[in-house]
Length: 452
Ligand code: FAD
Image 1: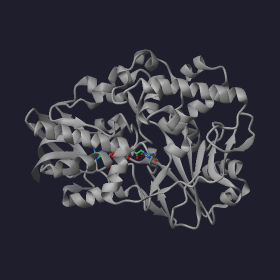
Image 2: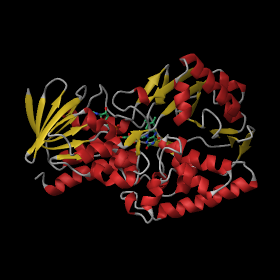
Image 3: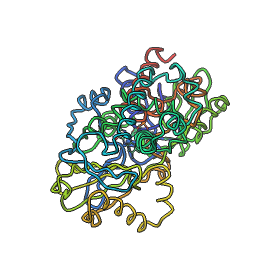
Image 4: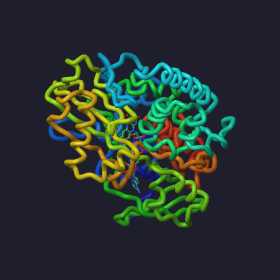
């Protein structure tokens, strides 16, 4: 079987569906081919053991204007993360302390060092255009050095280093700070407006969508109707200057003037291209990789921490669960915590049996919230590294040196094929906001060219 369209879009995540919507509105005939049996990619709202969970992305921050515009357009409502009361921090000395505001309860010296480094990182982020991070002054030097090495040059205070590394490493890129460059760290900050934004949980984890963030791609797909086809992994693309033929696993061939590959860069090599993509393009994608994080959802009969005067927010670079929050649904009397186990802690956790993992996670939560945390009603782990059509979380980032060497290549079209996902965004890099921006950009480029 074969069909003809103007544009084939591979991937029904937010990037692909945003591009498809824009192209359809401009009068082009599109098809969206999605490998999974569901819509949304890294957005997935599902009910597990009677609790509605955000298995993938969920939070919205005030700077994410592309996402906020989309929510308004789709008529979706948001609610605030619960944040009344004290937060918890477990320090290098292993002592649990509560605190108000955003500054961790550390020694005066450590606090001063964290504040100083925050200013340094804010200044660096201000010099960067996140869409072209390789152009900032000193980019090559910052890209050659791991973020861990950069932090060692900046301060002799271990706890300050551990906390700054936590904000960008465990909490964002989900890689240890020795595995990504100082330039990638600055990109993460610049893409969120500043480093100060990243360290302010009330800013970066501000709001959620009532009913779940997956409604964004679901509503987009609903409007596109039969133009979105699930269970259709794309296996091969042959192309020349006139257009492309895209083949799915069922053997169906789609002939199109243009193709948008709206998949993470790491999945591009699963498709057989004829002719092969230029060698430098394959190299570029081999220098990018997903981080690893296990998102934990733990529900209790009540949000018991609130009665103890706690907001539910907890941090520690020294705990298995390095950060946790009150993630109770706006319409639920039960209390749900969300926690994260990232990078090398995630590697270690995955070596354990499911029972051992659960015991380890609950022990960490008990350190933050007390013994009641050990007896949840429901416990679930989102393990995106085991998802065939993602294979990691939250997003991809470059190996040391890769951003300046190859970053610009990832957005280059090859013949009739363009590429993009939240992984190549500037503002909103690695986030849903970035996926929307990239989806719009890819569609607008084709519309401007009138599809050649
Ligand atoms: P994807 O969602 O990955 O979409 C790509 C699609 O392509 C997928 O549906 C995939 O199945 C499909 N595909 C791949 N290969 C093929 C093929 N060969 N043929 C056909 N289809 C294919 N962002 C936030 O803004 N806030 C958050 O709080 C947040 N938290 C997160 C928590 C987790 C656990 C995860 C995993 C992500 C989180 N993110 C968050 C990131 C956010 O979800 C992603 O950046 C965004 O959803 C990516 O959208 P995308 O369309 O670019 O890519």
